[in-house]
View 1 (cartoon, helix red, strand yellow):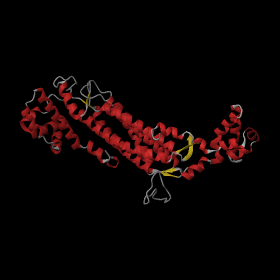
View 2 (tube, one colour):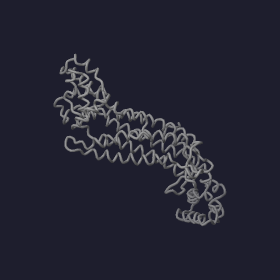
View 3 (cartoon, rainbow, N blue to C red):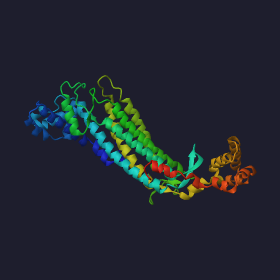
View 4 (cartoon, rainbow, N blue to C red):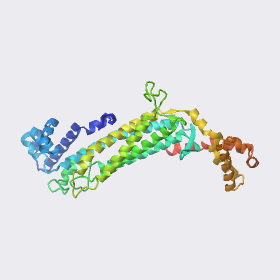
Length: 431
């Protein structure tokens, strides 16, 4: 994990000491379950519960043994003494590694979700604040009909909510433990021990496993993170496009001491949004790797292990970081309302063309005739003959069909705001 993009809470969850503590907890829970089964004497429990992890010693043993879990077991047995013979009884390495990993991913998802809740809050606040802040809508990068910044932000809010639901579902899938032994048949450890351990760890039991938990679960989890990243990328792209100098409607936060360029003092570059876009690409790469990990040989191979040591901690760290950065951007969003309104009326309100078209159809014109007439007027605007509203009000055929009140209605911005609140009601933001 790169420190620059790793929130401390995620670093702690995936840190070496945290991992080893989780391994030890699983092993102790397994011994306790064996005691309940009558396989291990209860007198062994006090000493086993005193077991201490010594990461330096584990590293020494791993250098000799070439196996991290074996080194861990050896070190714990050293610290426990004679009762250590009951440690790791009937288990295989993946019983410990995969079950601990499930707790790590679950705990990381909780941290990420808490960040998403904060992002939802600031999106809600800004959407309500700018519910009626009019700006141009754009399709294909070209002015379409006007909308409001509040509607745009409401769109992003809805996406974040869906992302949270996807991540919650994927977390439930990946938060499963397994203590089924070498090939998942419970040959040396009964299902009751597995169930007891998972219950203690607040995990579900994987119904069936090989030596490992099936990696489609992990692929779904990382894909959910990547989808959340894509949602954050879309938010960032919205700001980036609206921060272009010629548009100048929105901007990401810019500190009073911040510098946008070492050479050009005027620069205010959307670096935070660009960072989000870059990290979203990285997450998608991790999702692809997670899918490659699904098809392992027979009951398991180790090809997934090295990849997961990179992609799972990093994917969680990057997602958590991105959510927090997106929250900062939305909370500090710079809104140039005056420019937004001026852009709506660009070229004399050419974006109002559909309202003129509809008014002519309502006045009895065929749609084809109305479309061709309005299209011709917009073409003249683009040829710099005049602005759209002026040309519409001066066209004899249009004036004959539409009186002054009807023309005023065509260019009345309130017509685009009539049903804005319906969206807010559907999202539960208004009643």
